[in-house]
Length: 166
Ligand SMILES: [Cu+2]
Image (tube, rainbow, N blue to C red):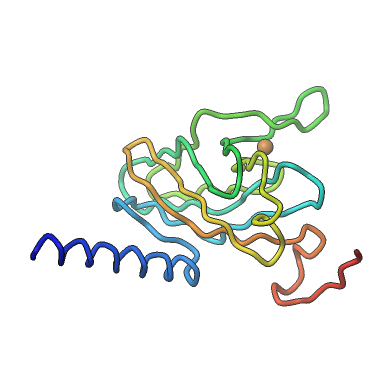
Protein backbone atom coordinates (compact mmCIF):
# COMPACT_ATOMS: atom_id res chain seq x y z
CA UNK A 1 0.00 0.00 0.00
CA UNK A 2 2.65 2.53 1.00
CA UNK A 3 4.71 1.70 -2.11
CA UNK A 4 1.70 2.36 -4.29
CA UNK A 5 1.03 5.63 -2.50
CA UNK A 6 4.56 6.96 -2.89
CA UNK A 7 4.53 6.07 -6.57
CA UNK A 8 1.39 8.12 -7.09
CA UNK A 9 2.98 10.91 -5.07
CA UNK A 10 6.07 10.91 -7.31
CA UNK A 11 3.87 11.04 -10.40
CA UNK A 12 1.92 13.99 -8.98
CA UNK A 13 5.13 15.84 -8.19
CA UNK A 14 6.33 15.18 -11.71
CA UNK A 15 3.14 16.62 -13.15
CA UNK A 16 3.29 19.74 -10.99
CA UNK A 17 6.93 20.25 -11.97
CA UNK A 18 5.87 20.10 -15.60
CA UNK A 19 3.14 22.67 -15.03
CA UNK A 20 5.49 24.92 -13.04
CA UNK A 21 8.05 24.67 -15.83
CA UNK A 22 5.63 26.28 -18.23
CA UNK A 23 4.91 29.33 -16.10
CA UNK A 24 8.28 29.86 -14.42
CA UNK A 25 11.52 30.73 -16.15
CA UNK A 26 13.82 28.56 -14.07
CA UNK A 27 13.40 25.41 -12.10
CA UNK A 28 16.06 23.86 -9.92
CA UNK A 29 16.55 20.19 -9.18
CA UNK A 30 19.21 18.54 -7.02
CA UNK A 31 19.63 21.88 -5.21
CA UNK A 32 22.02 23.75 -7.45
CA UNK A 33 22.57 27.21 -6.03
CA UNK A 34 22.96 28.89 -9.41
CA UNK A 35 20.10 31.20 -10.33
CA UNK A 36 19.24 31.53 -14.01
CA UNK A 37 17.81 34.87 -15.07
CA UNK A 38 16.22 35.94 -18.35
CA UNK A 39 16.97 32.84 -20.46
CA UNK A 40 16.20 33.40 -24.15
CA UNK A 41 17.18 32.43 -27.65
CA UNK A 42 16.89 33.94 -31.09
CA UNK A 43 15.72 31.99 -34.05
CA UNK A 44 16.67 32.77 -37.61
CA UNK A 45 14.33 31.04 -40.08
CA UNK A 46 16.16 28.39 -42.10
CA UNK A 47 19.17 28.27 -39.77
CA UNK A 48 19.91 24.81 -38.31
CA UNK A 49 21.54 26.25 -35.18
CA UNK A 50 20.62 28.84 -32.59
CA UNK A 51 22.29 30.35 -29.54
CA UNK A 52 20.86 30.62 -26.05
CA UNK A 53 21.64 33.45 -23.65
CA UNK A 54 20.99 34.09 -19.95
CA UNK A 55 22.50 35.38 -16.75
CA UNK A 56 23.93 32.78 -14.39
CA UNK A 57 24.12 34.06 -10.82
CA UNK A 58 26.01 32.13 -8.16
CA UNK A 59 24.98 33.32 -4.68
CA UNK A 60 27.04 30.66 -2.88
CA UNK A 61 30.55 30.92 -1.44
CA UNK A 62 31.82 28.20 -3.79
CA UNK A 63 32.43 28.58 -7.51
CA UNK A 64 29.92 26.79 -9.75
CA UNK A 65 30.93 25.26 -13.06
CA UNK A 66 28.57 24.60 -15.94
CA UNK A 67 29.94 21.62 -17.87
CA UNK A 68 27.14 20.50 -20.20
CA UNK A 69 23.58 21.09 -21.32
CA UNK A 70 20.93 19.20 -23.24
CA UNK A 71 17.50 19.79 -24.74
CA UNK A 72 14.87 17.53 -26.31
CA UNK A 73 14.24 20.26 -28.91
CA UNK A 74 17.71 20.05 -30.49
CA UNK A 75 20.19 17.39 -31.63
CA UNK A 76 23.12 18.60 -29.52
CA UNK A 77 24.01 21.37 -27.11
CA UNK A 78 27.51 22.83 -26.70
CA UNK A 79 29.02 25.55 -24.54
CA UNK A 80 30.56 28.24 -26.76
CA UNK A 81 32.35 31.54 -26.60
CA UNK A 82 33.40 34.10 -29.20
CA UNK A 83 37.00 35.04 -29.85
CA UNK A 84 38.61 37.46 -32.26
CA UNK A 85 40.66 35.71 -34.96
CA UNK A 86 42.32 37.80 -37.69
CA UNK A 87 39.81 40.57 -37.07
CA UNK A 88 36.86 38.19 -37.33
CA UNK A 89 34.58 37.10 -34.51
CA UNK A 90 34.57 33.31 -34.39
CA UNK A 91 32.73 30.84 -32.18
CA UNK A 92 34.76 28.38 -30.20
CA UNK A 93 33.65 25.48 -28.05
CA UNK A 94 34.61 25.68 -24.37
CA UNK A 95 34.75 22.77 -21.90
CA UNK A 96 33.10 24.67 -19.08
CA UNK A 97 31.73 28.00 -17.91
CA UNK A 98 32.83 28.96 -14.40
CA UNK A 99 30.56 31.18 -12.30
CA UNK A 100 32.73 32.54 -9.45
CA UNK A 101 31.32 32.67 -5.92
CA UNK A 102 28.93 35.59 -5.49
CA UNK A 103 29.20 36.60 -9.14
CA UNK A 104 26.99 36.69 -12.22
CA UNK A 105 28.18 35.49 -15.61
CA UNK A 106 26.24 36.86 -18.56
CA UNK A 107 25.79 34.72 -21.65
CA UNK A 108 25.17 37.24 -24.44
CA UNK A 109 25.51 37.76 -28.20
CA UNK A 110 29.19 38.13 -29.08
CA UNK A 111 30.31 36.37 -25.90
CA UNK A 112 29.65 33.18 -24.01
CA UNK A 113 26.56 31.30 -25.15
CA UNK A 114 24.89 27.93 -25.19
CA UNK A 115 24.86 26.60 -28.75
CA UNK A 116 21.77 24.73 -29.86
CA UNK A 117 22.79 22.49 -32.74
CA UNK A 118 20.27 20.96 -35.11
CA UNK A 119 17.14 22.69 -33.84
CA UNK A 120 13.75 21.11 -34.35
CA UNK A 121 11.96 23.92 -36.28
CA UNK A 122 8.57 22.82 -34.94
CA UNK A 123 9.74 23.38 -31.35
CA UNK A 124 12.32 26.13 -31.66
CA UNK A 125 10.21 28.95 -33.03
CA UNK A 126 9.39 32.50 -31.96
CA UNK A 127 6.79 32.69 -29.20
CA UNK A 128 7.53 29.21 -27.93
CA UNK A 129 9.71 28.11 -25.08
CA UNK A 130 12.01 25.11 -24.95
CA UNK A 131 13.38 23.08 -22.08
CA UNK A 132 17.11 22.97 -21.46
CA UNK A 133 18.84 20.97 -18.74
CA UNK A 134 22.02 22.51 -17.36
CA UNK A 135 24.57 20.16 -15.82
CA UNK A 136 27.11 21.38 -13.30
CA UNK A 137 30.46 19.90 -12.30
CA UNK A 138 29.18 19.04 -8.80
CA UNK A 139 26.57 16.75 -10.44
CA UNK A 140 23.70 19.15 -9.79
CA UNK A 141 21.22 19.82 -12.55
CA UNK A 142 18.89 22.61 -13.45
CA UNK A 143 15.97 22.54 -15.83
CA UNK A 144 15.13 25.88 -17.39
CA UNK A 145 12.46 27.10 -19.77
CA UNK A 146 13.97 29.24 -22.45
CA UNK A 147 11.91 31.77 -24.37
CA UNK A 148 12.48 31.81 -28.12
CA UNK A 149 12.40 35.26 -29.75
CA UNK A 150 12.45 36.42 -33.31
CA UNK A 151 15.78 38.15 -33.91
CA UNK A 152 14.04 41.06 -35.64
CA UNK A 153 11.89 41.66 -32.59
CA UNK A 154 14.59 41.37 -29.96
CA UNK A 155 14.19 44.91 -28.60
CA UNK A 156 10.43 45.09 -28.94
CA UNK A 157 7.69 44.17 -26.54
CA UNK A 158 7.39 40.41 -26.08
CA UNK A 159 3.68 40.57 -26.96
CA UNK A 160 4.10 42.47 -30.22
CA UNK A 161 2.53 40.64 -33.10
CA UNK A 162 4.25 40.51 -36.42
CA UNK A 163 2.85 39.79 -39.84
CA UNK A 164 4.16 36.60 -41.32
CA UNK A 165 4.76 36.27 -45.01
CA UNK A 166 4.12 32.82 -46.40
CU1 LIG B 1 28.14 29.05 -30.89
